Structures are given as structure tokens and as C-alpha cells.
Image 1 (tube, rainbow, N blue to C red):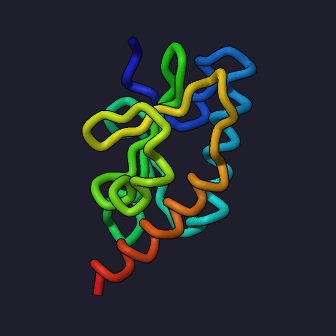
Image 2 (cartoon, helix red, strand yellow):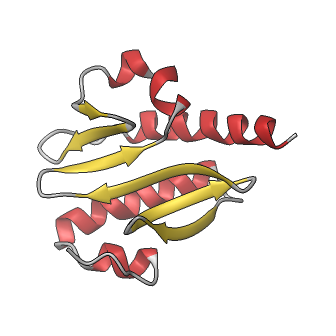
Image 3 (cartoon, one colour):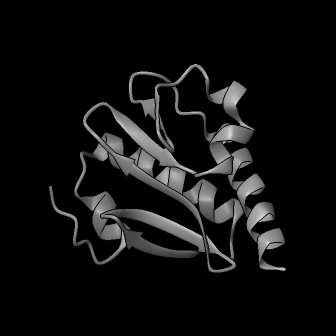
Length: 120
């Protein structure tokens, strides 16, 4: 698997069109909720920072989108995320079910506030 992407656009372009649509939507939610976020590629996936602190990462896999809002983004929304498969610091949104874009937005809003408070 390639990991040396130069941009989020390049990363997204490597997936089938139906998956690209979902990845663009995740990216749009992030940008809408955190317009000041710095976008990059880290660990071979799209990554976002605010106040020089990690905000969220996401990645596409064979059957799901992995979403990473560690550490507190997951614990704060544990109840809402409980119906999804999770790993240490990750949650999997399967392609065969609706992606919870509203929940992703709520997590991002929480993380933006958290990063801002840590920066003070």
C-alpha cells in the first residue's frame, strides 16, 4: 500500500469513485467544522491539526473508513460510537451502512474546542 502521498487530493484519487465521494464528504465536514485546520498527510493518511495539536485522521480501507480522533474524541462519544467496530484509538464506519457525517462533525467540534483549550 502506498503511503507517500503528497496531498489529500492525491490520496483520495487512488480510490474508486464511490469511495472518493465518501472521502470528499468526510474532508468537507472537517473543513466546515475546523476551517483553521492545517491539512497534511501523516502516517500515510489525511491528517488535520489545530493549535499545532492533532485533530483527526481518516483513511479508506477495503470495507470501511477508519476515523481517528484520539484520545478524547472517542471516549467523549463512546455511546454514539458503540455500534461501530473500534480499535485502539480508531473507529470503523463500514461502507455498507450510512456514514454518520453528523456525528463526525460533532466529534470534530469537540476536538477543536479541546485543542484550543490545551493551547492556552
